[in-house]
Structures are given as C-alpha cells and as structure tokens.
Amino acid sequence: MRTHRPGRHELGQNFLVDRTVIERLVATVDGLASRPDAPIIEIGAGDGALTLPLERLGRPLTGIEIDGRRAERLARRTGPATEIVHGDFMDFRLPATPHVLVGNLPFHQTTAMLRRILRAPGWTEAVLLVQWEVARRRAGVGGATLMTAQWWPWFEFRLVSRVPASAFRPRPGVDGGLMTMTRRPRPLVPVRDQRRYQDFVQRVFTGPGNGLERILAVAAPEIPRREVRRRLREHRIAPTALPRALGAEAWADLFGLRDGGGA
Image 1 (spheres, rainbow, N blue to C red):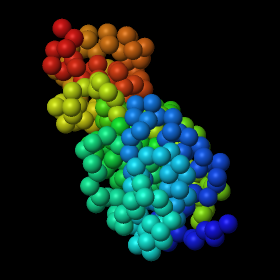
Image 2 (image 1 turned 90 degrees about the horizontal axis):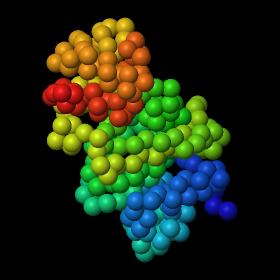
Image 3 (image 1 turned 45 degrees about the vertical axis):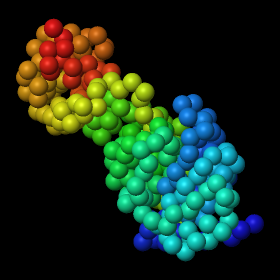
Image 4 (image 1 turned 180 degrees about the vertical axis):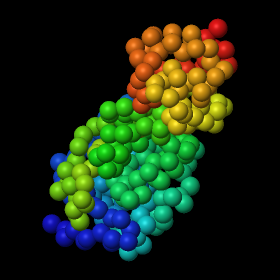
C-alpha cells in the first residue's frame, strides 16, 4: 500500500484518507443527473486519493495541484484520459463548456474558493468537501447566510454528509462536510439582474429593524408595505422574522416586487 505523504502546512493541505468517504464522494459525482458524461475538473489533486477513483468513472479528468512535486508524481500514475496541471486553482481558467467540479478544498481558503467557483462559467455541478460549518451555512441549515441568499436564484446548495476530522491527514481541528452545488437550469432571477439582486439582498441583510417588515421598509421603500405583508404570508414567514428565514423563492419573489412585480 502506498505510503501517504503529509500535506504541506503552508499550502493548507489536509488530505482525505478515509476510503469510505472517498467512495461516497465519487458515488455522489457519479449520481449527478444533468450531465452523467461531463468532464471532471478536480481542485487540489494532491497524491490522487480522489483522482484515481474518479478515473474509474471513465470521463475526461483534469486535476489541478498547486504542489509541483505532487503534480509530477501523480501525472506518472494517471491514465491517458487524465491531465494533471501544476497550478493554483484561483488562477486556473475554467472552461465555458459544461463540466463538473470536484474538490477537497483547503479549509483556510474555502470562502475565497467558493466565491471564485460561484462566479465561474460552464460548470453544472460541484461536489465539494469543506469545513462542516461552511457546508451547513451554504446549504441554509438553520437559516440562510448572506452569501447563500445572494447566489440562490442561480444555484441550489445541498448538504450530503458530515465527514469526521479523522478522515484527513494531517488531522484538522474541525470536521468536514460534503456538499453539492447545482446550477439551476431555470434561474429564479434573470442573470442580467444579478448585481441588482445581490445589492438588494445585501441591503436587507444589513438593514436596521427588528423584523423583515420593518427592515424592508428601510432597505426597499419602493415595495408597498401591503405587498411585503402579503408575500410574507404566502411564504409562511412572520413579519418579525429575520432575513435568514427567507428561502430562495421568497428572496426572488420579494426582489421582483421592487419593479412593481406585485401589481
């Protein structure tokens, strides 16, 4: 059995070593419905703990690895349909054509990488291993966060499972979480309105007031109060609830009222 080489601390490398978790992740990729034959791009290929099992899916595979020595070693072990690229994912140019993103993200770079992924074109699904609390927040468990709400009209977030810290080497101080992000085939808000929508969500999340009805009165005074009350009732949300109580459809619905959508 190949000896696992410890990750480099300065690169934030915590490698996945639990075979059960690896198989669950690969099965999650294999189960994606929209593009079962789509090429795979792996973020942080490392020593190939995911790369080699992903090769069994029989798809074109590109592994991006920031550590040049690891990239060179892994390239000698992979098949002809796999390309190992030495580089930083944050600088890697993702294709505009459909593909699936897979990765065990460095915990200290999770948020920056997620933002980069959400802004990238082309990919249809992403299967990601991140910090447990990040996975919960992105999936809206316990209420939506600002980041999730800002991207909900174009992406669905799902929490798959918790991954214990013992599944990694070196062992991190927190558990991981396996999650998926899926690009909606029909956005809830037109892409052309993305900036306006995200600004709206930002103002609501940071607006003053002790409930959505009052917060919206300040953050979006152009929306008639009666329409706010009506839409909150329709979505079964109390007027005293906070912005994190809103779901994807409710956010899109309220944004649509800004231009007289409720008339």
